[in-house]
Length: 489
Image 1 (cartoon, rainbow, N blue to C red):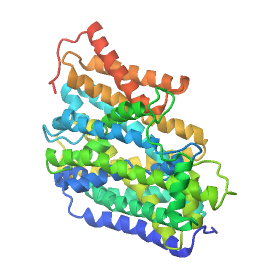
Image 2 (cartoon, rainbow, N blue to C red):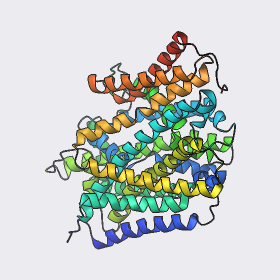
Image 3 (tube, rainbow, N blue to C red):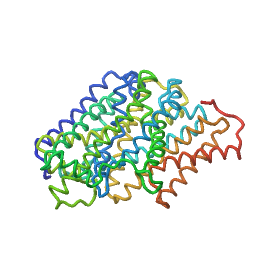
Image 4 (cartoon, one colour):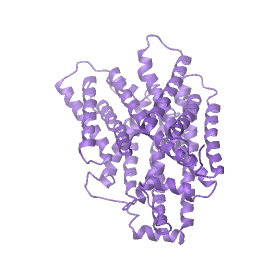
């Protein structure tokens, strides 16, 4: 028997939402005939839907709950937004340097470009690196989402992980990319509405309303936006934001299959370009909202409920949702939490299936497979990666939070490593497959050392990974020259 932490009405709202998401995936996937329909939505999705999907995909439950905690913390403010300046710059570079290569042929994955330039071994290695990091990271995000469900329903944590995982697997299995993108758009609207609604309630609960919040923010220097200090141990400086944010965005939005798959689903290169650039500005607005929520929560718990003590800042927004939002709005906001999670998880399953089928399975076949066969294999892969993420999530429940944080940071290393590999392909002609693979190994090794042996802030990881991979790869090609090169970009 379990005990509810929220009213029954709110639980019904959450359950109805989850069921509706699954049914929508079943409905939209009825007419899928081949791999292009399943993995790329028939290459016929509008740019604004791609935009909504890009933003929703990069917004996980950790983002929804943790970003307010950044501004809530003692000394917290708006400096996190400096990262979004780099995000915008990085996305613009992606549209100029990398996007044209993805539309040069009927590609399914980002790593097919690497096969053209370096060879099959580099393609497969990059794809495996993506698969390992993506499913490790998203298995941990599944765990973090299940913690919320455990708190509000009281079910065993492992069961919560399985329930959310199965719901995501079902609508991704049947609906494919089209279901993922359209559900992402719905989920983007839901979690933004949930955030705005929570902000309105916070202001209403303050005795002095908006004026009190504004005064508190100014008095405690919560509106500080820029930090021009040159301190590599601080994650939220202008320089870390511009350079680290740009490199991170170049990696995540230029070489990560989860994002590239969205571009390939658009109707043309111009539509993909429009969606990529616009997404940077939408993310700025989104993070600004989350940070303002954190400032509001800081004001509320300092003036209205000062006796409340939190062990972790990440718990603040979730606690406020359950304890202080009115009936009905709790359900809406919790649905927003699950929206943020499921948009990321469904995208992860679909992109993982695409990479596994096109980069690993198809090249291993000796005969040309039928469209129906590839569709079936893709669906099997979707289920397989869903099960893997559930297993990772359950395993994470037995680990300390610090270990989880370390694993998530390591999962993010792929952005810099893959950016370095793609840069070798774009900006050099003599570097071949051997040099690219040596650079990749060196990049991974150095990043592990930086993570565990230095105090370097995480926004610099992508720059370090990309620079190391590129430099060592280029140097290796000089020491071990290769006579024959595959096609150039």
